[in-house]
Length: 424
Ligand code: EPU
Image 1: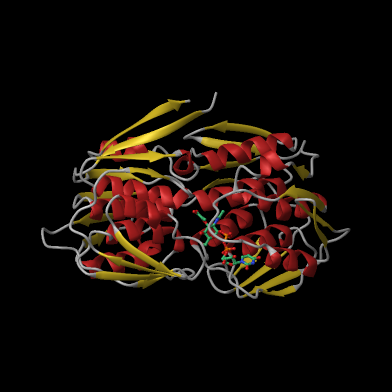
Image 2 (image 1 turned 90 degrees about the vertical axis):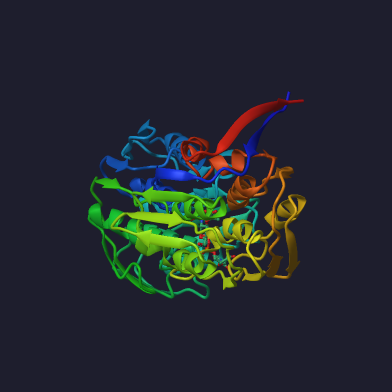
């Protein structure tokens, strides 16, 4: 029997109150594999309790690590007993970030065989730059029968110039280079906040990484990395999704525990729309005035530009803005699939190649819609909160991959959301 779920949202309630943001997904999925590089137990705090984290716990245990995971509290990984170096298809498929096991295992034991990763189908998502980086460090790489392989007798620091700015490639090379002999310099590196967080985590284990957050990162490898206790940074994309949801429902929400500096690209666009945004040290308040929200144009870019991960929820907000918004998606070639679903709810949208044109309508209406990927799910949540009537979101499991307790959080702000099982 196939059991699926659907989420039901009765829209129209302004979200009001205070909500605390969880730890960052994209940091968590890099830091957890990085524990394999240590010679002693590592404790990670502020991890979000999401499906991607649970999948990594299973993978690390399969590799032989001892993992003590208390959701909502901490995870301690003792990597010392780990003797595995292979990640099977059914494990790797559970998340995109399973490919970080390539860098982490290469750094740890000089070899890895990892099945193609899963994750969101938002483009072709090649990993040629990761492999180029591993090869520069002295590894032989392979891509046969649905598995990537990497193997090196000895990893040696090297200069690596990425052809494209890649978050995953930067992280994977940092992981392997942290245990290489000599210094690795990554040019054209990604600058996202989670790159800086991973560097801080590795440095807290004794690594020597400088320049994270700029486009040149220097990594001096160490033969041994020690254990550490580290709390990951708050989730930039969850913060942004909550900010957008507040604006979409014309509410008044304060997101606490966040880093306002990471949100500048979104904050600028919300202000341009006429939404009121103010921030404190670690909190952002989003309030709406009664007037119409204005359409805006934006282009997704690498950090500190507008993040591609917020493009989808932002596009939902713009479906009811006054005027025509133009969005250019420059990072992934297939990240507009949610727009077909928004059209079912009455949105006026057209897509031409990597550009979406959204003509604002006065009202969205609840409809059955299907989630196609994680942030598409976030977009449908935002649309459901704005719509008149009941929105049924099918395949809400995608949302669970990246948002911790999202229904509870939104319900605490006044949203009407429930989930039910569908049996057929
Ligand atoms: N690219 C290549 N070759 C490579 C690597 C990337 O051509 O070897 C291209 C990709 O095809 C894409 C662009 O470079 O067009 C950027 O890809 P990047 O490697 O930066 O993305 P990623 O590592 O696959 C991570 C996040 C994504 C987020 C992007 C961009 C994780 C696990 N995933 O993906 O997060 O959208 O960076 O910021 O950290 C999400 O959270 O919903 C999500 C998809």
